[in-house]
Length: 87
Image 1 (tube, helix red, strand yellow):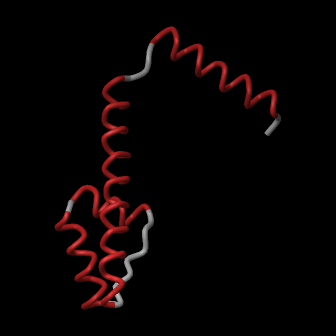
Image 2 (cartoon, rainbow, N blue to C red):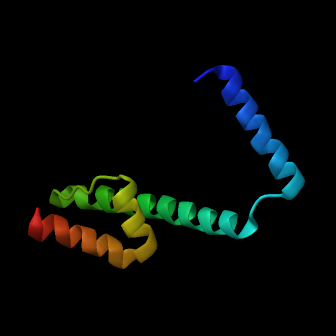
């Protein structure tokens, strides 16, 4: 795309947000989801650090981080069980 079109589209979005404000419910929902995915990535990271002694490695990607973030410790346990028993 042309850089001028991209710049104008970005400015239009910024001006619309300045006049009407951001959709607060969506922003709260999205920020909670992003925070849970980040926490899930940290859970998997620590599971990989402590599980490396036993040959355990869970890849950190959006799907596994979302599972671990939304389900918590039980999600990490489910990912470990899938890795041990299925893979």
